[in-house]
Length: 300
Image 1 (tube, rainbow, N blue to C red):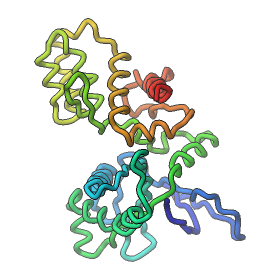
Image 2 (image 1 turned 30 degrees about the vertical axis):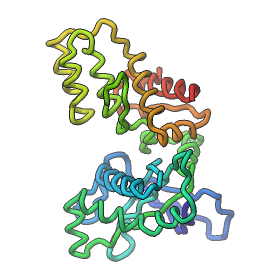
Image 3 (image 1 turned 120 degrees about the vertical axis):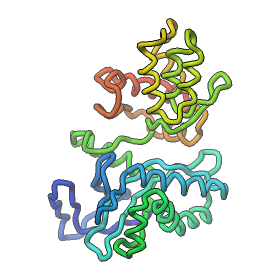
């Protein structure tokens, strides 16, 4: 799944040009990708300040539309950059999708995705970022170009970077650890693992506070609420951080088929949360979160 990408050079954020050989060389089956932006960085050709969340929201909205047509795919990973060597400038998005193991897409559905991807993402990004919409209306930016890449492209790139001992903070981490997957435990719905983890700190001694955390609008609000309660209400004496996290992660991955398929696809690779990205408790040398994910992968 994907297109061949021809290019003459790679441009990194430090403006270093990496020349390609003048003579023809063997092209690897999976195209090379240069990740131009880090997590949270802006796509900002003229001041429109499009961030990663804008792009992610647009892609997720398009995937939801596809599912209404019974096209069972989800986002594996993506990267993007502003193509400034054309006029008008435009965004280019490289997207890797993951299929539902039990409902593989056929050739007709793949063609539909390829034909509609760019226009649908363009429409959703205009909704996500009003500034981008304004610059598009003024014809200062051309429509987005979305390119599907083959399964395994991003993992191959990251493994190649790791083999070269490239400092991993330069690259965004795989979205397998993202919070945005809901699940049910003991008959209650949890929007994210963060909601479950924080609510369990108070579920025994202060059930009302635990419920308030469970129903918080966002994961960040759930975490902040738990911190505020810390000095006021007693925490559950039975709270075991590692056991709670394991149960939440297990529910998250087993109840979301496409996420489960993504975890299985990592095979025997070492999983690690990006250092400095979240709580050091989970991403330090002990790599507790990675260990729990690998334990769940073994169970699957």
